Image (cartoon, rainbow, N blue to C red; front, side, top):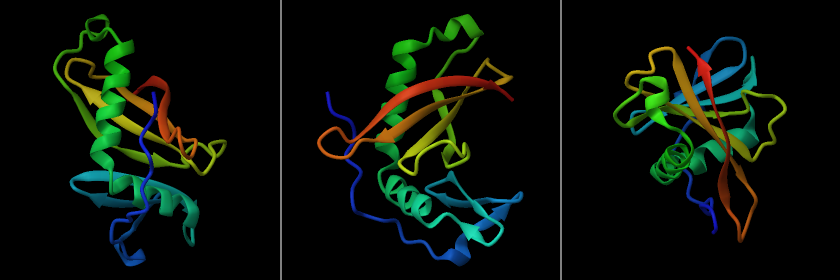
Length: 140
């Protein structure tokens, strides 16, 4: 089974549209979803920003794939959770050990009031594409 091929399409985004949060995080919104790109005080990491713009152009594909990944592995009732997964955003480079082609999709779910869940994707290039891998829950 192959993953999602990361397309060449980039969402339109000017550097002036990014907002700095904290010391080295840069944020932008796309279709009501927050994208966080690591960088420095001077600006976002250019390579990670490029990946983020390409992922944003296909955001729903990644959200759907991540939800399937979570549903296949998580028994929601063990956490008192119910309902649908709600996307919180995408993160690129928040973990400095991640390669440029890795990113996370973050979710919450009703009933799990102290947790946030993420699914990590990695782009393996053609023909495999971006595939979900690790997932985890972190306390809020």
